[in-house]
Image (cartoon, rainbow, N blue to C red; front, top):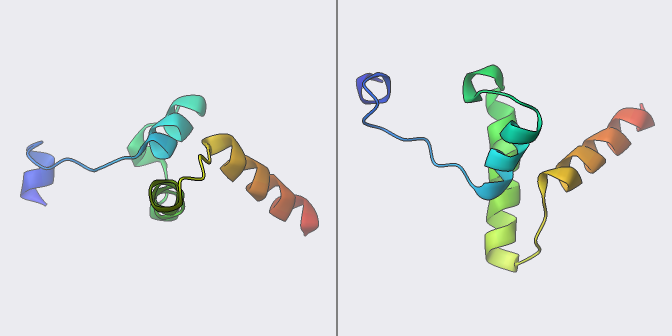
Length: 69
């Protein structure tokens, strides 16, 4: 915790996570930990399978799920 507060520790962010935060004009402290988990998984899938998913794809799936209920 001290390493994080004193800025010695960095939180690794993939491109999807960074793009998501920029698109929604959010700071990392404004997001729930589950958002980072989901976006991190999308980054990992892109890296391992070469799918090329973006933050737009994450929003699209969320909107489909939201409209379903």
